[in-house]
Amino acid sequence: MTDLESFEDVRGYRRRMLRRYTLVISLTIVCMFCAFIACMAVGNYQLSPSEVWNALIGNESPGAVQVVRRVRLPRVLAAAFVGAGLSVAGLAMQSLFKNPMASPSILGLSAGAAFGASVAISFGIGVGLFGRFATPVLAFVMCFVTMGLVYLISASRYGISTVTLLLAGVAIGSFFNGLVSLMQYVADENTLASIVYWTMGSFNKATWDNLAYSFVPVLIGVLIIAIIYRELNLISAGEEQAANLGVNVKRTRALAIIATSLCVGGSVSIAGTIGFVGLIIPHIFRMMVGPNHKVLIPLCIFGGATFLMLMDTIAKAAFEISFPVGIFTSLLGAPFFVFVLRRRKKEMWE
Image 1: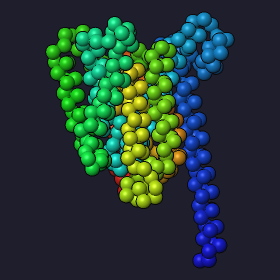
Image 2 (image 1 turned 180 degrees about the vertical axis):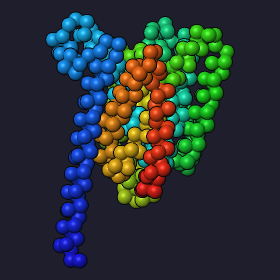
Image 3 (image 1 turned 90 degrees about the vertical axis):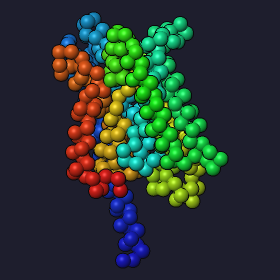
Image 4 (image 1 turned 30 degrees about the vertical axis):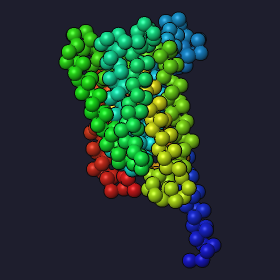
């Protein structure tokens, strides 16, 4: 094969991959908007897609406008933001640790946030300062406290290794999970119900006010991960190779963990702890388009938003009572993940 033929082959391959990336991203965006309209229409007060659109622009009856704008829109947007944030955070953790089972909870961040929320619910700490936002604020603060503890424990004079960071995260996460269990054991019935409901994950209390507070950290976290996508591409192939190619591995690792903390903290502050989103969504798209983070990040944003919007709608509308969405992400996500593992396990992490 001549050099010209090889060059043409490369150009042809890049054109095919570009068409494939464009098609997958376009279909994901279309699915997200379809899911948004469907989720806005479903509920105790059923609406058609045209009625949803008219209510959004204010051309519908006052009752429909009230339901769409004040009740459903903040909830659906919260589910979209949390799904996008957790999916991108999971993608970053899987690339950073080169572990297909990594997720946003791998560093104990979700457990730390759950402990902060449990403290606020049980003892009212922060209520005087933060008012009705005490629970989400303490959850967000404890997420960053957990990150600091993990870094402090794993740091040494030789630096911070990925394995040590992972083990420290597992240990701290187990510790905070134990504290949450202890608080559940000693709590009264009303407090216990509130803590358990928080740890299950739900958007029932999503409003425009707490959506505004959670949106900013999630947005910042996603933007940071999007900025360092080239470094994540190289690190996922090996830290030594990345360092030889000029990547500052320590700085990239720190940025990825800070961004993950922002995504998890913002998500937990509005919805509680929701598992499995950051584990399964990155895998699905990694199998579809490969390991390029330039494509995976937007796919995780749109795909994670679509997934959690649909799961929340099923949780609130499929039964007579509204279930916490965290239950459904586990019940529906785990069997699907096992199915994917069985079908595509050989090429899943290549």
